[in-house]
Length: 366
Length: 172
Image 1: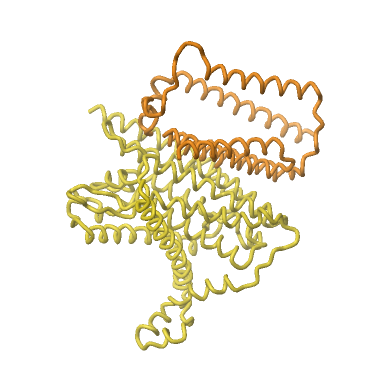
Image 2 (image 1 turned 30 degrees about the vertical axis):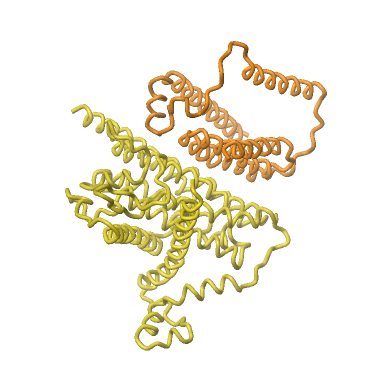
């Protein structure tokens, strides 16, 4: 590999990582705004930057929209006192926020955000179009649980510990049904004679005509519920559940270390939403029943930007759905979470897999 | 470059594995085991077996070690006591290690004039997920099924044993 290529890859990776983190910052703002609307409040609308906020229409408008709030939130996290309690295990206490952040930023490498058409061939806009794409996501995101377990254990106090224990059990339980629920999707995209492996790009190209959510609604539902559980969002936020465990696994954390956990949670949500949009919502295909598919997309940069816009739009819709659910449903009890995972989701995922396997076998025979 | 990476990952794997054995703190041991698994996965990647590498991470690093940590934390295992091994354990370990080294050496220096194949000469079976799956479900179907049944037996055994102890507790 030439040095310039190597340099180019690093630049692209940095852009994607920075974009993801900025989006996760905006997702925090979205959470505050949407929760306000749901509860009949206004939400953040006062924070302003001195000169910028005073510009007549634009500045005041941005202030009203709360768009300066993320800056203030970020500064607050940076400037606060950073306590390290005396009873913690220092090494793992510092390692845990990093371990939570890394998988979120790594998995985004294999999520295609759009496509560019070069000479009539669709090329994915993705950092790495791996043959094992989806499996790579599972492998790396499975490591994300260590952030919570280690934080809970290293804090060496009771509530964080309970949070850590809960998260480890919950993650393992829902990983199973998550993996099983999406197998039919890849069975379909790997029709006889197609070498598409587990790449997300080929799954999206397969949904030109029908979106995954339409002919695999149960897979979509199971996968969606599983991402809720894997990202620890309400109604599955057992590791944190502030009414029972103070703040769960991150009770002992403050300042920027807490900020890392916080940003990682939202980065996980955005990546999860992106994967859901790619697997079940047709990725960058604008309409579900569109036989022309990407042939309608203009070639070159303009088409690439349009496809990216469509994909990001769908992703943000799923992010909104995450927030919407959080402020609508109450939290499960812990035993209910376990019962749902093992006695309903897992059998349903297995039956779903077997039924689709039989159906695909019949289709392939004809 | 490839050679350098191989030695780097091999070193990570071996150092990780060695520290697991020597570590007193069970949580440290579990975390070092992850380091060792990541090293192994990197070696798989260098061989072009991406599927195996990802499965190695997802299953071992992502699930098995989480369960280890779960148990270690739940039982609140403190630093293990230094065990003074008996001389018979030490000598058995030494003999086993020696046999492994000898066996590996024998593999490298066999007298039948066969040479080692380089990576590019080997047929890339299992390089893609699809070819891996086809091989697994055709050529290696029997071992695959046997492994499945073995795991089932282990699972049934665990359920039986844990059921028995919980019944005993109820009776007491």
